[in-house]
Amino acid sequence: MTAGLWEHWVLPGIWITIQLTLYSAALATVVAFAVGMARTHRLRVVRFFAAFYTEVFRGMSALILMFWIFFVLPQLAGWALVPMWAAVLALGLSYGAYGAEIVRGALNAVAPAQREAGVALSFTPWQRMRLVLLPQAVPEMIPSFCNLLVELLKGTALVSLLGIGDVSFAAYLVRLATTESAQIYSITLVIYFVLAFLLTRGMKVLERKAKAGIGQFPEPGQGLGPWLRFRRPSAKSGELSSTGVTDVAGVSGITGVSGITGATGGGGAR
Amino acid sequence: MNHGTDKWDWGAVADFMPHFWDGVLVTLQVLALGSLISFSVGLLWALAFRAPTRFIRWPVGLITEFIRNTPLLVQLFFLFFVLPEWNIQFSAETTGTIAIGLHYSTYTAQVYRAGIEAVPVGQWEAAKALSLSYPRTWTAVILPQAIRRVVPALGNYVIAMLKDTPLLASIGVLELLQRSRLEAAQTFQYTEALTVVGVAFILIAYPSSLLLRALERRLVR
Image 1 (cartoon, rainbow over the protein chains, first blue to last red):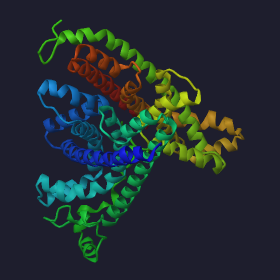
Image 2 (image 1 turned 90 degrees about the vertical axis):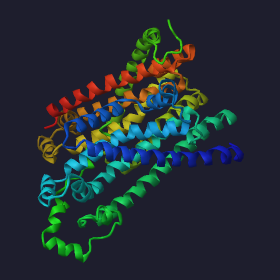
Image 3 (image 1 turned 180 degrees about the horizontal axis):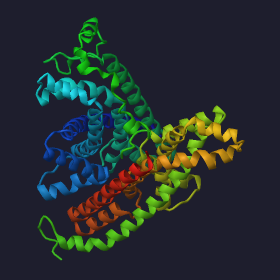
C-alpha cells in the first residue's frame, strides 16, 4: 500500500469514523434519555408511544433504516439529507432505542422507596427525576452505555455503503487501487479494534469517577451538578448522611443494571 | 402498473412481492446456517475459555475479543476478498453465512460462559463425588443445566443476526435488501421495495422477541 493512499484516505477515514461515532452517540443519548424516561412516565399513552418507538427501531435493521432515510424519505417527504446526516440520524435513532432500554432498566432499578421519598419531600415529578432518580441511575447506566458505544462504533462501518469516506470506505477504495485485500482489511480491522479498546478504556475511567462521585445527594436545586463534577463524597455529604437526608439517595441498595446486557457480554437485549 | 409520480404505488409493491419471497428464503437460509455455526463455534470458544492451560485461554480470549470488537461488515469484506487470494473459493452466500456465524459465535460464547458459570459449584462437586469422567461431567451434568438457562439469550442473538443479514447485500448475496435494491434499480422506485423490507423486519423481529420473553419466563426461574 502506498503512503499517499494511506494519508489520503485512511487517516481522514479514521477522523470521519470518530466524528460519526460522536454525533450518532450524542443523538442516541438524547433519544435514549427521552424515550427511556417516557417509558417510566405515569401516563399510559406516553408509555405506549415510547414502547412503540423502542420496538419499531429495535426491530428494524440499522442498514435498512439508513437506506430508507437516505433513499425513501426524499421521495415520501421531500427531505433530502446529505449522506453523513442520513447516517447519523439512522444510527442515532436505532441505537437510541437500545439505549432507551438501558435508561429504563436503570431507572426501574432505583429502589421504589426513593420515589416515595421524593413524593414525601413534595418534589414535582420532574424534580424527582432530576434530583433523586437520575443521579442514582446514571452511574449505573455507564457500563451498558459503554457496550452500546462500542456497538455504535462498529455500526458506523455501515455508512461506507452510502459512500461516506469513513475507514471502511477508505479500505474499499485502497483495495480497488492496490488489490492488496489482505493487508488493507487487516489494518482496517486493527484500527477498529484499537478505537474500540480506547473507547472502553475511556468509559472505564468515567465509570470509576462516577462511582466515586455517587453517594452525594444533590441538594434541591443542585440537579445533576455534583455527579457531573465527579467529586468524591465530601465530609459535608457524610454529615448529611448522618442526618438521614442522604437516605433519600442512599444508593448502596441499587443492583447493577449492567446485568441487563452485561450477563450476555453486551448487546444481549438486541 | 402505475410507476408514475405518486408517492406510494401499490403496483410496485405487487411487482416486488415474488422477489420479496425469494429474498425471505435466502435470508432464512443464511439465518439458520449462521445460527448453527454461531451456536456450535460459540460453545467451542466457551469450552476453550475454561481450558486448563492459559496457552489456550489467552489466544482464544484475544481472538474472540478481536472479532467481537470489529465490524461485521469489514470482516465480511475481509473473508470475501481475501479468501480467494489464498485460493479458498466460496460463493458469496457461503462466505456471508460463515462471516455472520463466526462473528456471532463470539457473542454466544459469552452467553455460554455466563450460563456455565451460573451452574452451582455443588454440581461440579457432585459429579466429582460420583466419579464421573471429565467429558461425562460436561455432557451429563453441566451443559444440560447451562444450556437451559442460555436459550433465551441465544434467541436474542438470532434476532440480532437476522437484523444483520442485510449487510450481506454488500457482497451481492440475494437476500431481502439486495432483492429490493435490484428491484428499485429497475423501476427507479426505492420507496415501495425498501419500505416493504423494513416493515418485514419489524414484523419478524417483534413477535420473535415476545416469544423469547415468554420462553425466558418459562426457562429461567
